[in-house]
Length: 341
Image 1 (cartoon, rainbow, N blue to C red):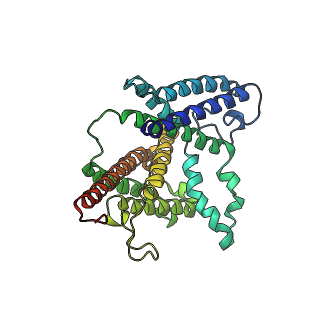
Image 2: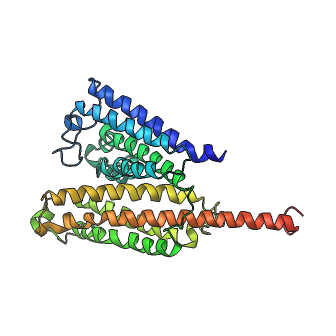
Image 3: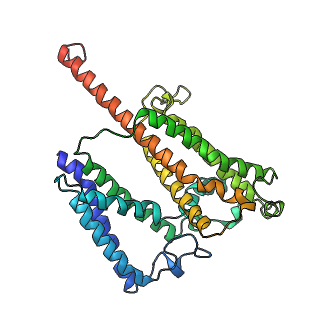
């Protein structure tokens, strides 16, 4: 049973890779839906690193997918060799962090706004879910899913070798503080613009967004700040036990996945968005005179790495607490001091 439990991620990743490889070959043979190049609604082809590709690139996708499938299947064998790990991690990083772009974060951030807009009668300039989640952006989620499955298989494979974890509670606590502090620079600029203060930009630049654009920016900033508050739960008691003011749940233990899944996903999408801005900066798309429009975003990979570290540390601490609670219960039963008396 242990082999199946630790190996199903590898089989799932291999299945994903084979399916996506077939999709890549189909694009190369003329099937519509190629998510990059001319079919991508990227206005100037600057968001995706694959913006310049054509459907013929599907053959490379098929070859890459075959390599991914072979690597994933190698992770299901309990040989203990490190070679599959060294190949799996770069592939997973490519699928999770490099192929997606900043539109993934924008889609996540604007989805709540699109959900409540009809309630308040907001038009949002006619924006719809189709605008926030076109197929090229949904495809990024598909690629990320494959990368996450491969990463999970790699972790399960590496878990065979007993090693001291780098993710200690102390590092987790420091990471939480970093994850809370880094986005505040971005928040400060967007809140300032909404108030008419040209922080990090020229007055001319500020005037370009007076039609409501900076209010949307302030919404994103508030969204990020609220996320920072929630990040504190990874080291606070209310991140493990529901507080008293939550009716129906007060005093109950917080399911670990309730924090781990959203925090882990957010750590990925903000890292991806930050890497997009770093690529743009390296390409010379920005000027120092308008640093407020791009420099805070270049620190987002630090935010993402800190949030990921805090999340893993939280996961390991909750798992250790659960194991300890189970051991204490078993000991109580055996000694006649528990429910087994």
